[in-house]
Length: 160
Length: 138
Image 1: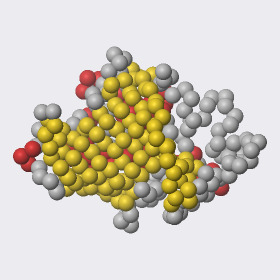
Image 2 (image 1 turned 180 degrees about the vertical axis):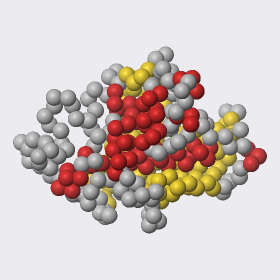
Image 3 (image 1 turned 60 degrees about the vertical axis):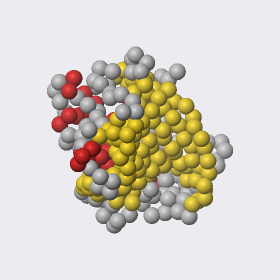
Image 4 (image 1 turned 120 degrees about the horizontal axis):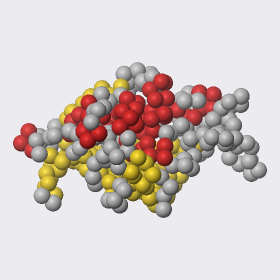
């Protein structure tokens, strides 16, 4: 059972729509009933994941971004992944839409691990791919969106 | 919404989805989406630790902006599927153009569906996103 419980709120949809530069008036309606969400809005369910690893935790002391130092990550015992060479990137994202999101819905998410595979690349060395499938359901247990995400850890930074 | 009698296989629709992407927009996306990966807002970390020339956009920001073109083309609330692969990074200063191409029109369970190929390119012609979508047609 997932810990995510995401209330669908129109102010959140408004901020999300602004951030992707989409002026579609349907994302900014005053009337709750008329508001719809952009197709990738469900990605912001990360806001409601208490353990989401890409958000600094209040009172946490191990955030990997910079402060005084270039990273706040404490060196680990193994020393093998101390550098930044191995870095996770987003490789693919797929959504299947079963029903529209509605303001007032409370969405829960169930994440299932998927396939994993490896590939050699010229631009980034060995690539380790891993897939996860998330089922987003509303308060009545109805399936709203199925999302498939593929992450990749590269051996070295991608050459540009 | 796309109309069956107005579309055919091979039809395309293009839109400029961002001109001179600003770092601030990347920060806006981090704030709205909740993805605060320092690769997208923290130049010091991104250069010194991750080994990239500087911060770059979330793949999901590029997918979100590409989705703007897509919903402008197929209409609101008509998407059944939308998926992408991130093929190149998107950097501050980039200008992106996104194109949808109808590659199939089919009947399925009493609905008419358009299958769409998607490509988003930067100002140098490099493809940053390839993808596909299925949308309901009237």
